[in-house]
Image (tube, rainbow, N blue to C red):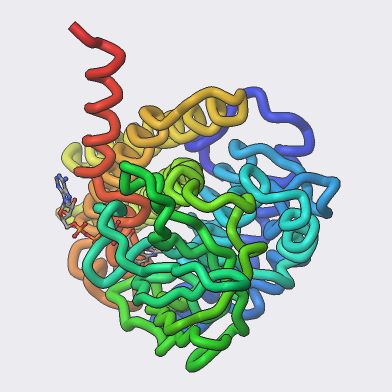
Length: 396
Ligand SMILES: Cc1cc2nc3c(=O)[nH]c(=O)nc-3n(C[C@H](O)[C@H](O)[C@H](O)COP(=O)(O)OP(=O)(O)OC[C@H]3O[C@@H](n4cnc5c(N)ncnc54)[C@H](O)[C@@H]3O)c2cc1C
C-alpha cells in the first residue's frame, strides 16, 4: 500500500473496515474488473461479496440492521472500491442515497419497512430525477403525479437511472400540485416498488433495457417509463407531499461526496499504474521515471490525488458533524473530478502507445474518469452552487 490517501484520526473500527475492503478490492475486484468491464457484464459475484461484508448497510443505523457508520467511512470505502473498479462503487451509490434519504426524511414506518432489507441488500435502491430533456435543471421535471381517490397516479419518462434494472425500490421525483407559488415546493418524492429486471417490472412501470455507455460498464443504466402507475399515499417519502426537491437535494449533497471519493479512487489507481509503468519502461537507456518530465508528472499526479482526498474527507467530516456543507461538497466534487481526469490523462501519456490498448487498465480508467465530470452535477453546476453561496456569505 502506498502513502497516498491516508486519513488521520480514524477509529480502530474504521481502519479495520478499510483494511478488509482494500483486501477484497485487491483480491476480488482488480483481477477481474477490466475483463468484466469490456464484456459489459454485471459483477454478480462481487456484489454478493459486498453484501457479505455488510457494505450495503454501511451507513444504515444499527437499530435497522446496518453498521451505523459515518459518511467519512462510506467515502473512504468508496475510494477503495473505485480504485478497483468504479462501476462497483456505482452499484452501491444510488442504494446508499436512497437509504440516506429514508433515514433522514422517511416516516418511522418507511424506515422499518425498507432499511433492514436495504442493509442486507435484499432491497436495492435507485434514485431518479433526470428525464430525457433535463438533468441539471431539476425545476423542469415533467413527470407528474396526480391525486386519485386512494393515492396518486404517475405518468412520465425518466432517464439515466443507475441500477435501473437491478433495483427494486426507486426514489422518483415527480411534479405534484400543492398549490405552492414555487416550482420547488410542487415536487414530491415517491418510493416506487418494482421487480428487478427489464420490461414491465410493476403495474405501469417499464424499464426498457440497458443504455449502451462509453464507460461505467457492467452496471445497468436505464430509462424508466411510468404510465398511469398507481401508488398509495403511504409511498410519499416522509408522508408529506411538496418536500421532494429538498429531500433529493439532501441526497445529492452526500452523493457529491461519493462521486468525489470515486474520482479519488480512480485517480489513485491511475497514479499507481503510472508510477509502476514509469519504472519498467526504458527509453534512451534508462527507465522513463528518470526523465525529469515524467518524474515531475508523477509528482503532480500524486499531489492532485492527495489534494482531492483531503477535500473529500473535509466535506464528509463536516456532514458527519451535522454542519451544512453544500459549498464544501461542491468544491470537493468539482476538484476531485477535474483532477481525476488530469491524473488519468497524465498516466495515459506515461503509458505511451500501450495506454491506447485495451489490454492496459488505464484505457478503462480513461473512459471512467469522464463520467466523474457529469454525475451528481457537472462542474458548471458545482460552480453555480459554490458561487451563489459565496455571494451570500460575502455580501457587500
Ligand atoms: C452514466 C450516467 C448515470 C446517471 N445516473 C443517474 C441517476 O442514477 N439518477 C439521475 O437522476 N440521473 C442520473 N444521471 C444524469 C446526470 O445526473 C445528468 O446527466 C447530469 O446532471 C447532467 O445533466 P444533463 O445530461 O441533462 O446535461 P444538461 O443539464 O443538459 O447540461 C449540458 C451542458 O450544459 C451545462 N449547463 C447546464 N446548465 C448550465 C448553467 N446554468 N450554467 C452553465 N452551464 C450549464 C452543463 O454543465 C453541461 O455542460 C446519470 C447520467 C449518466 C451519464
